[in-house]
Length: 146
Image (cartoon, rainbow, N blue to C red; front, side, top):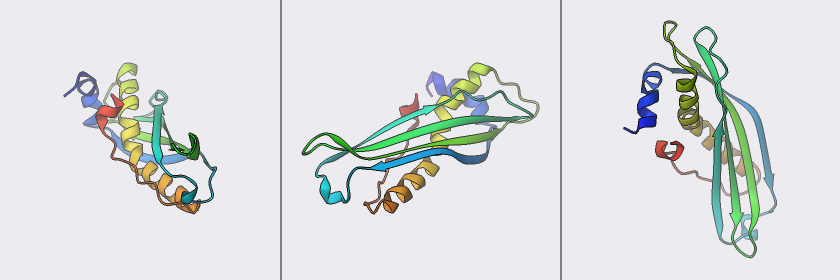
C-alpha cells in the first residue's frame, strides 16, 4: 500500500457515500459524424476541490472530470469535449475526528474514484445524444490519482 493510501485508509474504512449530485456540465462537438475524423485520442483530466468542513458527520467534495476526443488526422483538433462536476456527500461516524489534511487527501484520491461510474454513464449517454459512437472509458485506477 502506498503512503498516500495508508494515510487515508482510516477514512476509507468508515466513510459512506451518501449521495452524488451533478452540479455542472458542458458538452461540445465540432463534428457531425465519426466519419469526420480518422484517428482519435481520448484525453482525460481530473481534479477535486478540498472538502467543505464536515457538518454533523457529513462532508462534501466536488470532483471534476473533463474528456476530450482529439483528432490526430488530418489536423489536431478537439472533436468532442465533455466535462462534468459532481458533488459527492460522504458520511463519517459521529465520533470520528479527521484532520483537514486527511480529508484533503481523501478528496484528491477517493472522490474521482467514487465519481467515475457516474462519469462513465454521463459521458456515454451524452456522446450518444450527439449521434456519435459511445465513448467507452477505461477503468479508473487508483494509482492514476496518486
